[in-house]
Image 1 (cartoon, rainbow, N blue to C red):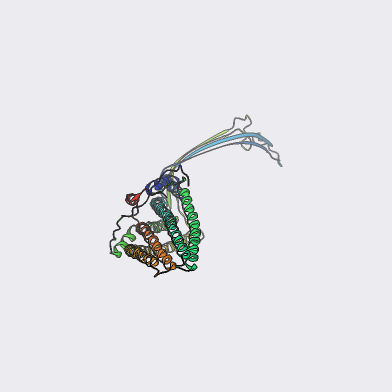
Image 2: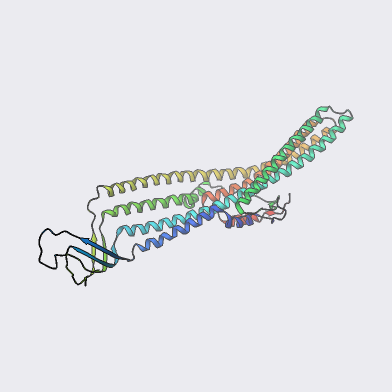
Amino acid sequence: MNLYAKDSDLVEIYQRALTYDARLSASRYQNDATKELINQGRSLFLPSITATGGYDENDNERKILTNIDNQLLSGTKADFHSYDYSITIRQPLFDYSAFQQYKQIISQTNLSDKQLLQSQQDLIYRVVLIYFETLMARDEIELLQSQKKAVNEQLLESQARFESGLISITDVNEAKTKASLIEAQLISAVQKLEVKRQQIKVLTGEEPGKLKGLQAAMNFVAIDSDMNRWVSLGLENNLELGIAQDQIKVADYEISIRESDHLPTIDAIASRTRNWDKGGYPYGDTENKGIRSYSDVLGVEINIPIFSGGYTSSRVREAKLLKFKTEEDAEYIKREVELKVKQNFLSLQANYAEIEAYHQALKSAELSLESTQLAFQEGLRNGVEVLVAQQVLFNAKRDLLKSRYNYLIYLISLKQSVGILTASDLEEINQYLVVNEI
């Protein structure tokens, strides 16, 4: 652990991840790039201006097979240059395809906004998950250290009672075995904690320092028991489903765009062309003064597609089939959303009941250990039974701590699956975190 790293809570980890997480940054760039499509769509309705220019060097020669007395046409060689330029302005008057493309772009930007919001919610979930998984790993170490201390005390007492001839060597060997197993578990737990801390560093770019833990006195409240209300909320707000519905709209516009290839387009055109030809046959400019030509055009151009070999019709059929595929994808996502909301809801309800059950189990385990230790002192129980009672107690402590973290993780998962997860949910949980040094 970096001793100089700043102490952190849930909101601080999230704030650092907001500026460092590469997945969220990629979504932001994608969203900005998609918004540029709006400018591209507007350009479809604005005039376009093109300019061309050219310069040519001409070296021509011909063979004359008949006698020509005309001086203008009797030349056999021409060495001259020519140049020209042209400017054309084109203003669309009617282009149904451009109109449909612009509406498709609006749907694409709405879709991109949802994808960015989905990435933000995903980051919130990832921060919560890794934060509480790190706290679980830290608690595991603390529990193992506490259990190790209790087992060592039991080992010393067993050795003393063995030397006094009150118990057999079996109790001593069992305590030694248990102590060795706990030592091995500690090594694994420390490694797991370090891995979790490195995952936080990947997420934020910094060592997390000491993490604030969950208050022991935190009260958990049961959620609204109407599962159907949560499912309805999910079908209305789930971002993955909203993205799929926007993809259907995009596919609809794609059909219209391709169908518009059957329709005419109308453009207003204005152009100016200038050309200078410095001489040569067949014009017979013997004085090399050249010929100049001018052309100014103002009019309306209509392009009417007649036949493209079936290409346009095939593209329309393709777009319709792709829309059917998109609709089926959306239906699958809808069913998955319903299932995911129900799973998270039921898991949260079950976990809430588990917390109370583990509280009772912990109290029972504490009483059981006390009575077993007392019976051991009186010679009514052996050391193995004491070790078993200790293990039951520490398992109950671990299960209770884990269930408390899982409750918050399931709560965040439920809100994410419904589509209502925000940073304020982190702030609400953060109020129950306190400094807890390892």
